[in-house]
Image (cartoon, rainbow, N blue to C red; front, side, top):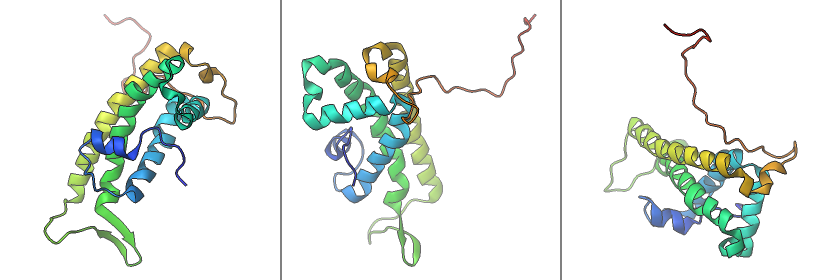
Length: 177
């Protein structure tokens, strides 16, 4: 069972280059995986549960929940949208069958090569990373708006809104001349 989605299947199809005839059997697990693997580690379990409750009850659009609405529609939406696009590249092209992994094919359509799929997935991942960075910044600087960010217990996934930039350069504490 998929459960509550932060972004509907229809919204993803309407806002992306994804074809409208893509099956929900393929799309819905990708949305769920993106929510679990990308969004929840950024915002934490408690805030995720709060968003699910607001979506399920229809209260996400109430004026009292404007901060949650902004978080969902201006920051989470694009992160999920482009992450799902990247996640879909392989499942839409390859199928696991009893006889092994096969390319899906139509009589009049030529499949792309694996290197092209990787390029396309990286293209969408770059967009998703950009929006995930914006989401992290929003949470970092506006965390006081969401009491759920401090209510997490050790059993919950803790929010991590710190930037994830790394470098291989070692910069010693000595002053450069």
